[in-house]
Length: 155
Ligand code: DLZ
Image (cartoon, rainbow, N blue to C red; front, side, top):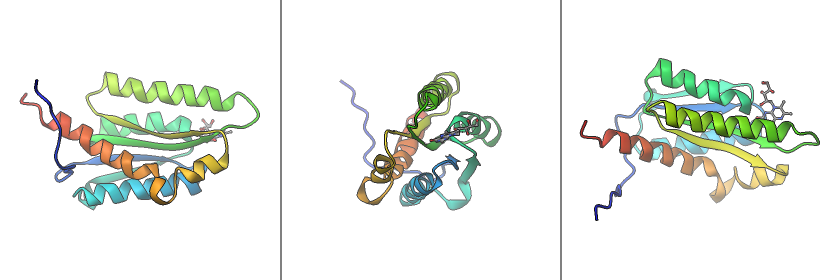
């Protein structure tokens, strides 16, 4: 058996894209900040991080595609926060965004981390974007780990 496991999340020399939706910005900016902390902790240089803002979660797919195609990033974290309302809007956007980001993972050679909270209540979003449970940190680490897999290729 060959088990591949990186001992250390090492982002040195990497260029990472972060796409952030402005809808529910109190939540998405907190997620972004935790993500940026994870990148810094892993040794990614500040000047090799590109943060692209987009209006809402629906737009994170295009934002991620843009960073992949025009900024030669090693990985992207796509951050948004959908909170369910009274209509079907939540379901349609959540479905479109999850499929759109998945498609980028399959069709491009750049890993894209799914950083979109899909919450039933505002409290669920707050709980997942603050303190020890701020998911943004793990998303930053995930982006680096996935980029490390790509960089580990012999050819
Ligand atoms: C329109 C809308 C609504 C109602 N709710 C959210 C939300 O909870 N989270 C989010 O990120 N974006 C929301 N949007 C905006 C859409 O994502 C998108 O920006 C617009 O439909 C324009 O394409």
